[in-house]
Length: 470
Image (spheres, rainbow, N blue to C red):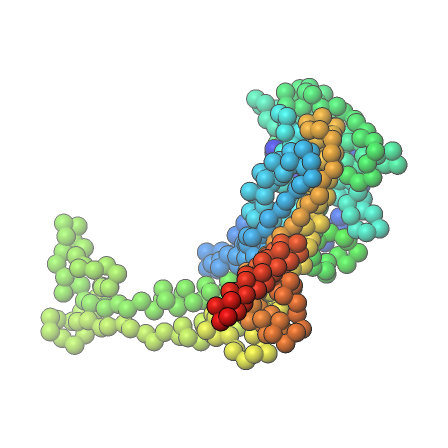
């Protein structure tokens, strides 16, 4: 029902009916500035490897996707979410498992564009979730905490030579969440067209034009906001891209990389030889033994003369270009909150203890903040899924509890942490229970049971040796 959310709808609204027409159609206005819209379009183009500075001469290092992918990988690769407590919890766990299977890929897009919307809905006796990217939905209103309390989503279908667009508005009201659906028909994809009945599209036939869901105090979607201050529009609670502060540096990196490619292309070894040295084909053209190595020239010389051929083997300047590129990559890493060596050459990273610690802490803070923001969004998503399960009577009512385990082994040196904790236990500054919980991922109850078991075994060994001595 909600499978095809459109990226082009933003441009459609802007070109054809703008904010005034949108306000007239839905009695709402879009709460996003032109600065944020422009930035979103730029981040999206960069992520899709279509940055405006790329051309035949300027090649791409594809850094935006690499940066977003690295942050998403570190934040989600070991994520485990457990929903427990009842039959309802078991149902929610089954539904959420499909979300978790796609989470890393979708979080990457959210990190790249500054945010991601999770929108659950009922489909065929189960709860599905749409992952709506930041340039594919329209925030309308926010509360004092910066949460999106009203939002517009869009769906688009084609039937024959007609194009249909459905605008779906979620709006919090004192009585609950109001959901409105408006359909439009057009003969062109580029034009919104005229209002029409939802039933003209089969997939929309069962949708109500308007429904008020009572008994809830927040909307039935969850917004993941990338945890970075918005310096594009400081008054906006919307998130910004993970590489929003490194746009210029990414451009410079692409330009330097292109220079490096040109250095190798233009510096290829070649031997320029007079045409007289080669035989001719049926067309009278010289037959070259290796077209990559040999080039023909007309010297007017004779066989055996010194001008018959000339080797071309220029000196490469790749070392200085690579050094400049590495310096720019380090600045990108710093601006994006990544450790040195993530994008730059690890061999060129300074090895002092202070620099290594500061670099690792930067990545750790970035990943930890991302995980906290993601957990908050997923908790709201599970709550919304629970509400839909009740509304559609999909599972018995019951309470549930959620447990998130991200595991920080990706950004933390576990061996070093183990040795440090062991020394703390030996000096009496950490309890053995805490040591087991932290290093073996045990809950407190299991850790105490393991410790009691170990102590019991040691006591048994002591009693055995004592008996033998007697």
